[in-house]
Amino acid sequence: MGGKEQSSQILDNLLFPKIFQTFRTAIQPTKLIIALMALAVICLAGWIMDFTKTVAATPGTQGEVTELQIYMTHPNQVQSYIEAHKGNIDRMGVFSTLWDFAAIRFKDAINSLFAFNLPRVATNIAECFKAAGWALRYHYIYSIIFFIINLAVISIAGGAVCRIAALHFARGEKPGLTEALRFSTKKFVSFFTTPLAPVGIMLFIGLFIFLLGLIGNIPRAGELIMGILMLLALIAGALIAVVLVGTVAGFNLMFPAIAYDGSDCFDAISRSFSYVYSKPWQMGFYTAIAAVYGAICYTFVRFFAFLLLWAARWFLQFGVWVDSSSKEANKLAAIWPMPTFVDLYNSSGLATVNWSESIAALLIYLVSLLVIGLVVSFIISFYFSANTIIYSLMRKRVDDTALDDIYTPSDEAKTKAADVESKPEETQPQPESDTSPQPPA
Picture 1: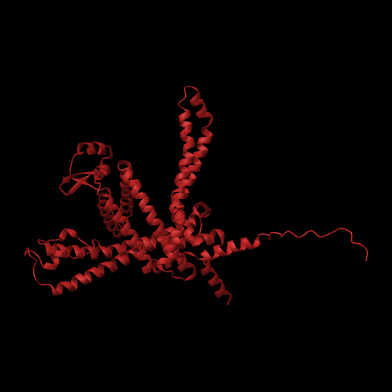
Picture 2 (picture 1 turned 120 degrees about the vertical axis):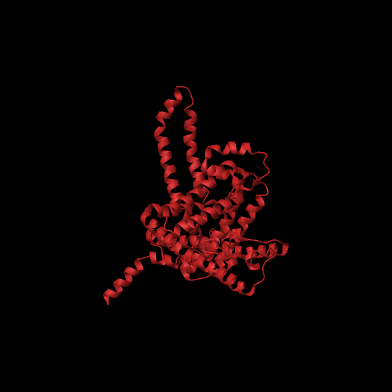
């Protein structure tokens, strides 16, 4: 009997198996709808902003050659390339350029992952970050505006997904779409400013080092002052390093901190930093398990999407025997090439020749794009759901807080009511008693 109780206690102390609840948490339709709406808003904003075509491009043997491709291979030649093709009418938008580049890198990363070529996967991810650096360097106004739009959308959508995941994991509740969005909208300022605050802190600390560098320009006295104050500069650099490491390692916990505990901006940052620095190996272990499990879940979801499209395409083929107007392919093959697991929609196989086939191909493309969007929405939902569960486990490990302890708006109302009741009642002025001597009876 005692052995069974001891085994049960050991299983209870093992928190990492709870990460495997992420799939059924992330696959909820409410979360997928929120993520899909966020993805649609971001893409729509990018396509609208692409009306200002600012990316230099020239025709090549394998499609357009853009300044981004030049930047990836020869970074020092980008400026000369832009100047040489300044008046070229073949220009592209920043979003569409990044979209095409990321799609190629993502496809290559998937192929490398299934081939167990992990260094190649890391290279593709690094190249995506490098492409983002290109946009920020050469199209900084566009990038800043687009970043603000993205952060606003992710603050609302990501906050809502984290809130649903927190309530589902902690109490088994499944809040509706409006309830989750109402929470993220109410906490919008916290969600929006939390990722920006560490950057502001690092810039503020770096300002002191910058000022010390300006003082160093003073003849003779400048280098002397720099030498004297170098220790302070190193301390400031250490603080920047602490904030940078905490931000990179604890970034995934910031949104869940707000969703779970109703934290404000600096409380969310403080909690994420505290959990990372208190138990860094535990945090890394949970993150690694979530990443491996997420890759397996993504493979299953992608296979399901492929099977869905393939089955619809295969059975449609039985009913279509008429050739297309070009007489070179079957009508269905002309408007909808056969999907594959790697490429759910292959636009290179289209062979439309008239307006009706073009419209049909466009409609099929939009439906296929919806399926692909749901796959991407699952990735977004899984990311926020997994990190919400990891936050709860880290909070349990560091603060010994129960997994089902979660902030609700009613708790805040009760706290305010308790604060009001705890205030001493104001004493009412009492009428002065007549203390004059009374005549004897």
